[in-house]
Image 1 (cartoon, rainbow, N blue to C red):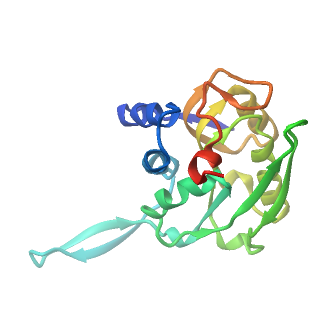
Image 2: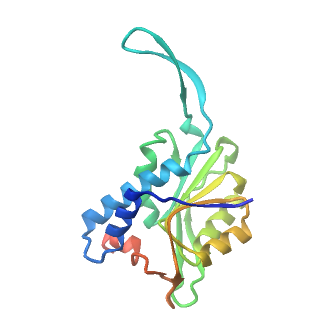
Amino acid sequence: MSSVILVRHPLVSDRLRTLRDRETDTELFRRALRELGLILAIEATRHLPTRETAVVTPLGVEARVEEVDSSRCLLVPVLRAGLGFVDSFFEFLPKARVAHVGVARDHDTLEARVYLSSVPGNAFEYDHVFILDPMLATGNSSVKVLELLRETGYSTEKVVLVCGFAVETGIKQVTRKFPGVRIVTAAIDPVLNDLGYIVPGLGDAGDRLFLL
């Protein structure tokens, strides 16, 4: 059963305001996207298991505590814009591995193709996979990445798709083809324009992050 989690929080709303504003400069845009990623990371990792261990406090007393083993987590940023969320997730999952996937979109047909992948073949070593992509628009890119993961041996039941902005078109395509995937997003916008951009959205996240 798929689930779509829309993260609602005053700080999320504030970062969305900054990201949507065309007057936001590159430095502030990068910071706002990283900060939004921090909040999304907290929600996206809510299901992670913990293991009990013990520490000694400054008072010399042993305390039972819990820890997360982030070494079995795989981050999959979709190039380019997905790089904007990587540092956010590293804050909480410092031992996570990163597998970059490059997806190019044909601006006429809006079809997507994978042009680069460093997804490791040892899928059994990873219990949790996080696809990072600030925009879930048509859903074509996300579906391509999910197909790649499945073909490489990853169970899509272990996948969380993390995005800043989404539309129902993309959500429906992903959930129809991969019903076990969880989607965590900060906004669900109304429509796509003729070029496949989310409206009102924030423009091209990759362009605004990297000035290219």
